[in-house]
Image (cartoon, rainbow, N blue to C red; front, top):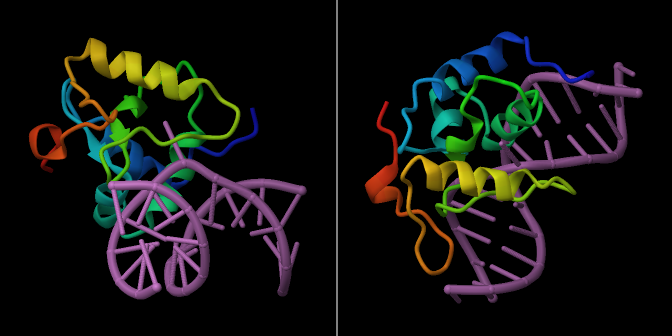
Length: 105
DNA sequence: AGGTTGACAAAGG
DNA sequence: GCCTTTGCCAACC
């Protein structure tokens, strides 16, 4: 493991993600605005989390309401299943209706 | 130190 | 609505 999860910026991002309850979601852009950084940095912070993390990383999706694809990993499929288990529903195109599920901080 | 690299977003065609 | 730029910035080496 060589990825950083302990910078102050990353910790602020994780703290926010932890505030999202099961059955709700947030977006990279929303988190980015709250900690005054860019969406790409939020994605980078989440990528650094270990598998056994207690941070509900699966509740972070993109601005289109879809699960973002990372390189070679099968995490996207896991993310989908975890969200379904939490009661989040996807439409025919595989998108979540942000109007219904978006977290309001 | 400076170029490379992303789990993005918004705007344009 | 899809695909292509374009802006972004922290971490990494």
